[in-house]
Length: 100
DNA sequence: AATGTGACCTCGA
DNA sequence: GTCGAGGCCACAT
Image (tube, rainbow, N blue to C red; front, side):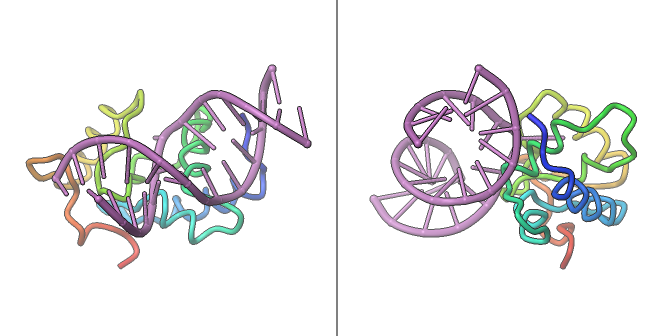
């Protein structure tokens, strides 16, 4: 699959603006872009090329848990390295969600 | 044109 | 809390 370039560009723009140590959700990104849905944002993250500079790991689900996918372990490690906290059930505190 | 597939979301039970 | 159904948009067959 390949997402339309216009939508990808908007998604990239939003993801690139997530501050260090904060996270956001697929749905919020979708609502900030035009013509995108949460599913498409997920698809776009899966399709990212190898050399991208995008903080894709700062994108989590509406339940504030890391989505279940092949790179979930890497994502968890990357966030922890930035100081993102996870509670006992693997959720990120609500006040770390961007934007506020 | 119809159907199936997703790193998802919301709502109701 | 969890779980399932229905909805969502773009893309492949």
